[in-house]
Image 1 (cartoon, rainbow, N blue to C red):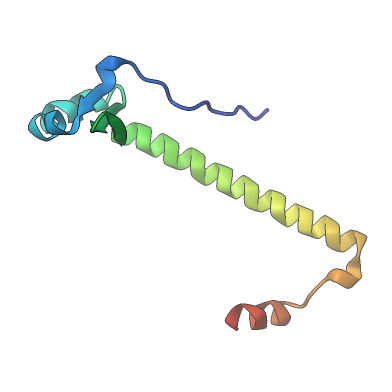
Image 2: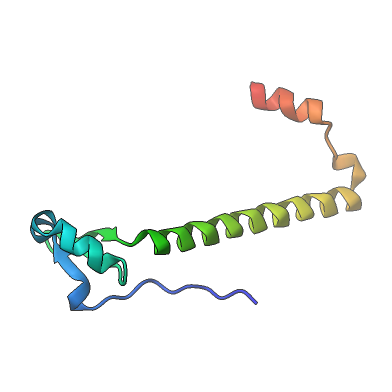
Length: 100
């Protein structure tokens, strides 16, 4: 079952102005290991500070989703060719078109 993630929410304790972020970066790095911090510029969130563990989790999940999508696309193409073998193109033809 695929679970869609909702847009991140945050509370006021996670908001940090860019000027505070520049003054208290070391302290904020430590806090960000437990909870993402949202750095604002002129009242608008423009940067998110997260710990490396969370970054790795996000990166791993993104990689997994990209691989699953590639497999889905490949399976769709195989099914299309199985239904209509005349639509198949040679690898040489595909490569020639990519080089152009």
